[in-house]
Image (cartoon, rainbow, N blue to C red; front, side, top):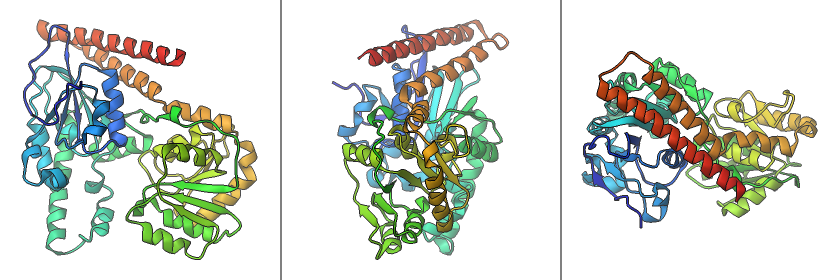
Length: 432
C-alpha cells in the first residue's frame, strides 16, 4: 500500500529525525508522468527518505507508482477554483506559492526546475541543489515565439501577458541567488542558465530508459520521425524535405496540434507515411529497423534521439541544443549520426544525402554504446556523486555552530549510504 497522500497541504518540516538528516525534493507539479517526472523518479531512488513538495498534484492514481510512498505536499494553488483543469493559468501566483513552503529543518533541498521550483526559500545552513530542465523558456529567449503561437502579440491580453512575463523574469533572476549549485540537463541549458541567471552550471544529461530499447542491426530502407506534432518540432520541414526525395521513404509517428501542417507538407507524397502513436514494442521495432532517425527541433535535450541510438540507429539532427550532447557527428572518429547546421528543408535534404555517403562508417554497436552514457543507473551514480561533492565542499567551509556542522557531516554520511545502496541495487539488477 502506497504511503503518499494525493494532496497534503504544505506544512513545515519537523527537522532532523533519529534516522538522519531531512531531505526535500521540490518539483513543479504532478499531472502526468513525462520527462521531468522521470528525473524526479530517479532522484527519489537516490534519496528514499525525501519528502516531495509540488505547486499542485493532480497525478492520476494509475501513474503514481513511481512516487513509491513518498509524502507529497502541495501549495495553496491546489485548492484554488478550477485548479484541477487550469492550474497553469495560475502561473503568476506560482512564485508566491513556492515561496510559502516551510523547509525549516531540512538539510538538503533538491529542486527539479523548469518554471518556479528553484525559487523555494532556504537558509544559510541548508544546501540547495537545482537540477535545471530549462530556465522559464517563455519568459526568456522564447518569449516572442510563445506570444506568437498563442496569438498574444497585441491587444489587452497581449499587454497583460508581456507585463506578467516581465515580472516573472525579474523574480526568476532574483531567486537564482538562493541556489547553491545548478546542474543543467545539457550544455545548451547550461548556456541558458549563464545567460538568464549569470551562474555557472554543471552538466548532467537526463536519464533515459535505454534498457527498454534493444540493439538491432537489421536496417530497412525507411527514415523515421517520432514526435509530438507541435510547431517547434518542425516535422513539417522534414516532410517537405522528403517530398523532394520521392525515392526515399519516411515514416512519421505521432499526433498533436501541428497535424494539419505536417499532412499538408506530405500531401500527395506516396513515400511519406503518417501513423498514430504506437505501443512501446512497436516503437522499439520501428527504431531498430529505420535506416536513420531524423530530428529537426532545437530541443533542450531530446530523449527520443538517445532512445534511437540505444537501438543502434543513426540520428540525423539539427545541430543546435541537446542534439550536440547526444549525436557524435559524422566527421568524428566513431560517429553515431550527422548534424546539419540550418533548420530548413534544403539542409535536411543535403544532410540525408551526406548521411548516405557516410553511413558505412556508423556502426550500430557504437550508437548503442553512445546511448549507454544516458542510462538511468549512470544518471543516479553521477547525480549522487555531484551532491556528495557539494556536501563535502560545504562541510569543509569555516565552522558553523556545533549543531549545524554536525548535521552537515551526518548528511554527508547518509548521502554516501544512499549512494552505496543504489550502487548495490544496480549490481543486483545487473546480476538479475
